[in-house]
Length: 143
Image (cartoon, rainbow, N blue to C red; front, top):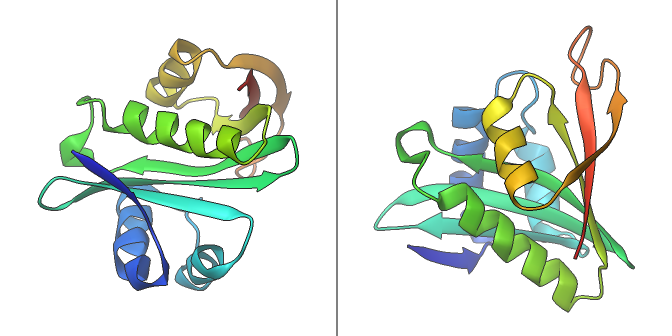
């Protein structure tokens, strides 16, 4: 598996991953285009002959925010998400971040397990974060 930085030329790939993995919570194509072009955001794509998944992180000073982590359904449970998350954490640390924060839907057990395994801790609950009665856990991890 190859993980590489993504740029604006990867908009179609990133948009495909986002639309394949998320429903109402997905980022629209226009927002993804801005994220890929804007300073302060890093996006990485995992590939193995074809695209497997992507991760985006926003960094600002000592804190980095996990914006999105998605692996196409046919490639889950193969370590892709772990590798993407580790890459995002390393990149944020290299840019001076000391902590990574994220929000994850309370019903997303596979993602919760990944984050807990990587050392993230629950720091709170954000009510209705993803819409009415769709709460999120707020998590953080020292880098």
